[in-house]
Length: 141
Image 1 (tube, rainbow, N blue to C red):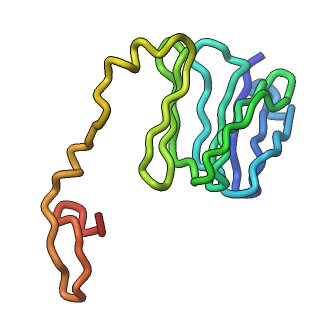
Image 2 (image 1 turned 90 degrees about the vertical axis):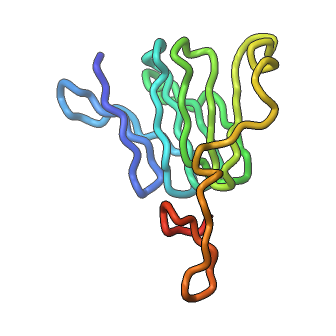
């Protein structure tokens, strides 16, 4: 029952047999590049994908069916399940972090309303063309 799941530039998620190398399913729902593919930590049937079409799609790879789609309207860059598998986070192209999960939200209520990354405080400078850049990365902030 071992499977390998891949995402490709043709917007298709493919499920392969790890034993035979044969294609089991081609899963189609995305309309753009797929940047994120994440397996559930406990339920090996569940995989989630996300891409520049702003869609986050939950798949049952055993049956080859889409279970649910979330659409934030902005490209999905990354995502991850919590260790227990009850929560899921997404980051998008705007830099926003979205948290999804089960329960009453009690644990999330204890988190700060604003959180920052260490790179949010990197020094800025102006390059020779007048563009503001992050002096650590030499990129615009």
